[in-house]
Length: 588
Image (cartoon, rainbow, N blue to C red; front, side, top):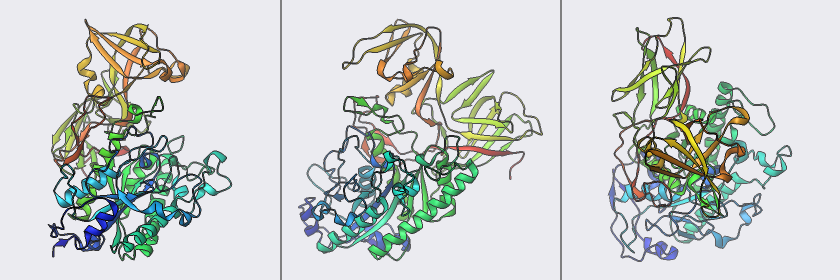
């Protein structure tokens, strides 16, 4: 039996939301959909319900790259994608004005320091996969379903502040974090509003997917998990188990409570990204345990909000640029389609097992690869590396430590088969030594010593400083420059640690010039002549990806940074971040 999307009577809906005035078309046949989700995707209006913290709300993702109706026929409330707001009926969301919940075309909106979210990339890419016809000019697709995207969270929130527990209203919460709460209640009320609006138009409504982008706020200062703002930090293994179970419980309750509203019979699946920090691995553990949770993959390949511009400032490196948000939205849509439409048992690119050869100098790692073959990519991302005597402390993102936490030198990493890599060590490991493998570090290599430091020109009313390095290091810096601003550091500890984002690079007569704005110098700690500089990306990362051929519908649109403007977003799958994977003495 094939899936038919409801088109009858659609013009009334489209006219009411100003999306389309084309003649009615016949239903299009689509690929067969698994029975478990067919009813959700067959509705006229299909919800994509988001929850999370800053990366989900589009913190500092400015300027917008989807500021107007994209033409794909997807929807948001008149209120916007972000439906929760400080001091606006947080605890009684049902009192929000009804006229704010009229369906309008989906587009990104700016609210202070909040900008682009993943909404357009996700909904528009998913619509393109279902209909396979791009909008042209003023023409807009009339085929359903029409995706409605909402988000009811807030940046910096812990998982139980976003849940029905609503810890943000607990008296123990610091005053500066008591913003009214009610995030979970708002999400449920959004579903009620959507159902009412759809029924008023004579249309049906369901929620096809839950999208989860949270976890950084629960990270503890020593690498564990903080369950709240007042409880003691849980150590890494225990804390990750706690977060795993809490996320599964959240998914079950959120799905159940939304099902009561939408009258859906089956569980609503959740799709999560991998956050940086200890919660990222816990998210993967939750996906392994709950069949209704799917991890899309990491986001470290995305350009950082250090490239964003608003209110005469730049964004924080932990956030994503507007292009980064829209790009990751397409990644999410790709996986939603493969799971819900194609029935693929999706797994992100991740390690399955690692073992050391009998020669004790070669470690082989087998991976789960969504679309083989594996690629060690040092063109799109700079080669991740940090030197160690005779080799590397880390290479392509990989690092090996023994049971005493001492780093073992890596000589080389190579792809050995479509699903396997080989890591060559600088020296044999003793037979009794137990080792672990980790993946994901920010270092992009050393670039030489500072030969001179001078005052730079005033740029946009900002004083600048220029660091000079002998030699043309342009080829080494090319992947960093392509993504926009990058960091340099002298890698010293304590008060001597200097770091700054580089926003201008110039080479002339065998000298490379690096320029930064004085206001961005970390703790005002200066660099000095003779110091060796190490380059860093905003996110911990590695170079291992697959060869996924899926095409994006959007291109880099912000031409004010980097060199990728007008290139299509690549939809490869990059390896998840992980720590302390055991390395065995044999294949198990």
